[in-house]
Image 1 (cartoon, rainbow, N blue to C red):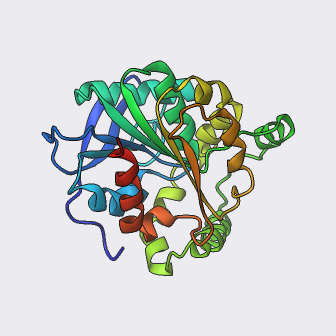
Image 2 (image 1 turned 180 degrees about the vertical axis):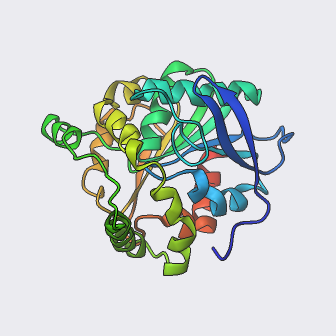
Length: 272
């Protein structure tokens, strides 16, 4: 990714939390394939999907939405639940008139995808999920106890987040230049950076997984959730659902390997 990605447009639409910002690519009038709606990990924004949207554009209409409070979307008035985030995403889908869709959710975004599918099971055809997690009770409680992020007068919070992002991002293959292009999405609104993470920690995906009767592809890169993602396997009910281990890929792979990811995703979404 060098410079911002061409061929991706942007717009705002009204939701229950004010305006939501989204990125779009591909032919909106394409009738041969349901559109793909993407939900990002948090605290980042849908900005990280730009290279992937461009790679997917020749085959289908794709949308990536900034979750409420992240990127350029308006901030919710208080701590949302995953159901609240999913409701806002459904507001966007309804405004765009999307009747049948596929979903892609990355980490926190996977929990949002679970809930969208639970609320609209007949609307969601297939799901691709990146590193969804089913926490143990102990792990869930630990995540709920994470300290809130703060803003320091000397800017040391930015240095700490940069070092963390470099460690994780370069592990996944991002260059420093690539990371620098999206880093600002990580440091916006430190006062509410914990909102989506806390909502995701409180959400139990097991029931939503079991109730979804259509195919699910789970992508499992070798990152910090490599060992926990396979816990989803017992809850996959459709014969075509599976976990795809990606031992040579890491954190942020959807940016670095957008073309390869688009091939995997298209092959899954287009399967009979």
